[in-house]
Image (tube, rainbow, N blue to C red; front, side, top):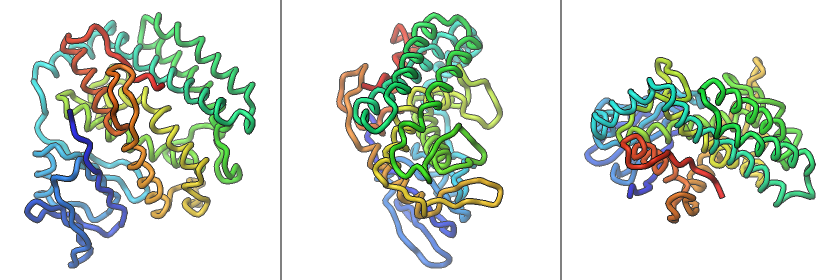
Length: 343
């Protein structure tokens, strides 16, 4: 079983990372600011303009320590990867499956089913826990609409039909997301998804969460020997980790969206944690990112019972387990890919 180690986040814009023996060294100018033992790290995520030394990137690639670069405002730039892990035969199977519309549809169907199932369950949990503070009828109606979509997803016979059903479900879900926000509605409101750039505080949080989750999913897929750039639902596009985006679909509602709601409703982020730009974009401040990442790390350490394996795991292990199950399905060890169904 893969051990869940730590993720090192570099938030200061002037930090340069280098390698010293078995340690990652954070340098500010000519001064050493901190050092971290390599053997304790699973991922390094830097938001600094300073960058990192080739020696450090090489060692991380060799030891399969995920290394991702973001701008200080949270836009993904690049990810360091080494030699492809696993058996080349697995990737050949993956590529053949990606070229087969029937297999693409079969795998995509389970992932979209998981996404809609988890979105509905998130709404049901909110309605159960906070029924007196929100419009229960609106949430109930949206939940029923998504429930009605689930049998249609199971019977969908083409990727195009699946994308249409997923679009309807996502629209229904996002239409009531604002109902699930219970704190400081003047600052935290959701009137629709906006990206590149996010135009309000909630979209800024969602975009940041999705970027981190996509990195975790890509690292998990590469770790089991799959090519994170060749997907089944998301079409191939240069530079896009399409399979990571596929895998994170079922995890968005329960890992990313639910975490953002927890940050807001538990007042772990405040109005002061956001910057409003002249263009209308809303971005997290450095302090806001610190609060976010502290909560994200704590979330990944929380335990739950995996619905398919029946084992106690941490949330941070879920992308790795799902990547492993997908690899086992492609190898023929499983009759179908079991999506993560949150309970």
